[in-house]
Image (cartoon, one colour):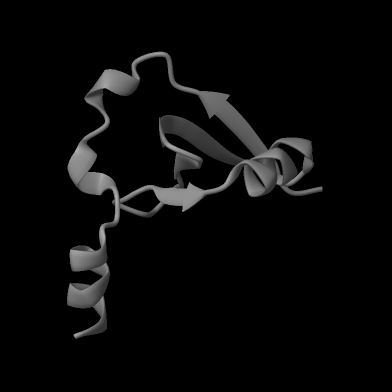
Length: 71
């Protein structure tokens, strides 16, 4: 069995949760259903970060950011 991937829960905005994924500079954003699937999976370990204050609002995707990505 392979070592589980460690995901760090670094913030929440509305119904979305931000998870820091190894190797990615910006967190991935998931809904509650997907977060629960990660937590229930043997392939992932979800660790809650107690210091979410350091998580920047700029890391959240906005419609402006999404348009820049598409361009």
